[in-house]
Length: 355
Image 1 (cartoon, rainbow, N blue to C red):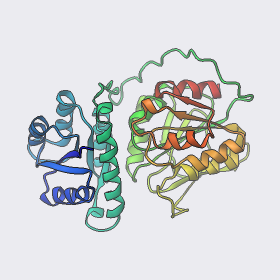
Image 2 (spheres, rainbow, N blue to C red):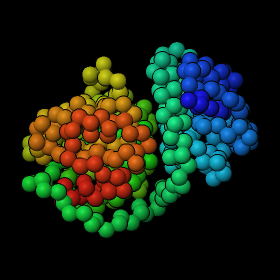
Image 3 (cartoon, rainbow, N blue to C red):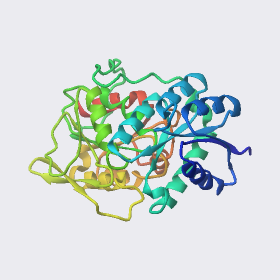
Image 4 (cartoon, one colour):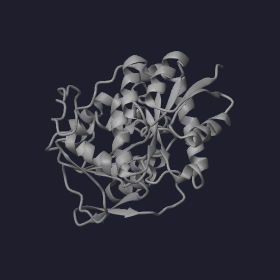
């Protein structure tokens, strides 16, 4: 099998070397070039034709966002952003995902010390995953509406509601790699009178989940917020789990309340879909709908199994529309699901189960 070729773009020589060292540990990956700014990156993409690019955001001469836009217009390919964990870095990263980047890795002190092994594993996994599916990412993407503009019009719902008995009263959505872009095709399509609360677990660092909530809120008819804890769940409101914390639900009167907690600390992801889904299963059971979307690994499988065993319903995104068919695959192969549907139909199914 041919090696997956990578172009590393960063204005810091230390960062270029660090990323090359991480990737060099995998015999299936080959770094074939470097660039120190966006102008060099565009030229190197043209001449070297890499399978994957890692792209810094803040660089001299031409920044990463400007370069990304030109690369995706000329030579669309998988681009992984190297992102600062600041609020500004989070906003820029979400813009990069809108422009066609497939994912990001955090650029922080962790490159020098803490957490470097997890970042290494993530980076290699992502490069191999995206490099093998290079053609998936060269499809033209419809750009998202800029912040402040009206959300896109939802197409007419044609498929009949499933035979589920009583309507659902709560929705939990779990997603990871490819999630921010995919959520923009689901949440803005939900009607203002959906009638139930929605809880989202998206694997992201702190700051990023707040930026994601603000972005989705600006595009949506429903309200979207980052969960802070001790909130009474309200209908027509979407609660996004805070990066670096788990989101659990507790019973509160006739409804539910959010709990934000660092425990358990031994999960692969914080927030974890499994942790939130398990708490939803316990407090809502048959009244809940679980939705599992694009992402690496199997987070969500155990929690959604529990939800299904308690009488809840589960929808999985189909392989063809996933950026990475990992989390949905784990749920489908465990056979604890009701439907497998393309991304474009997920919002329709949520409405059908809840209204």
